[in-house]
Length: 230
Image (cartoon, rainbow, N blue to C red; front, side, top):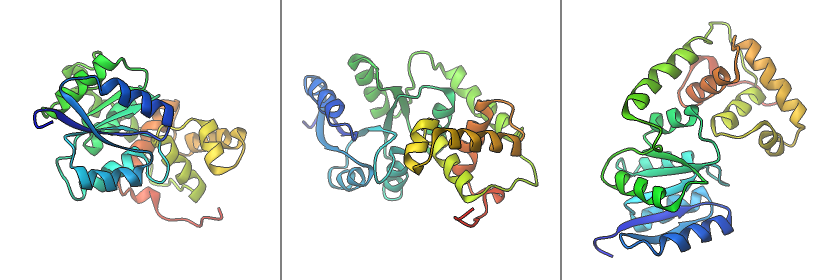
């Protein structure tokens, strides 16, 4: 165990988590030291085990993967996370890097590539998949900064519900998943998204996502508190 990479697996889907653990238990240089089924449990188990790398789903109960990572970074600046998600778009690569995560891969990734990513991240490198070259990663921050800056305006006002939807968008949820979380119809969420795009002068869904990621991860003056009843 001393020479193995110590890993915690975090995912709320028991079958996926158990299957992943079973596959990784056969890898010679990796040891699964524990698992978590929600973000809060992950924070507690991280503190107990101090693993080399965490492989975490983004969407989990109590605390999301992103939220649990931020909590862990409060007591361990060197925490190394490889996130798993059904979402592979550049917006989430950008956000993962922005908060200090070391990697993001599809949940459909092959076990050999996942282990390859774990090894790189354990050595202090990043891994977002074969297609994400260093040059492509270097250009990502500027690309999404420009997208988000293109929709900033001094007169933006967002309601409590709109800000909540922005948070869910930044977490990678679809309109259907957001509707389930907020107990409203998908049509209602789609209407809110359309209205927000008009408010922030966004012409594409990617601009809305870039806006959501930027302004839910920073203390923007445009996201001042508003009445939750609105």
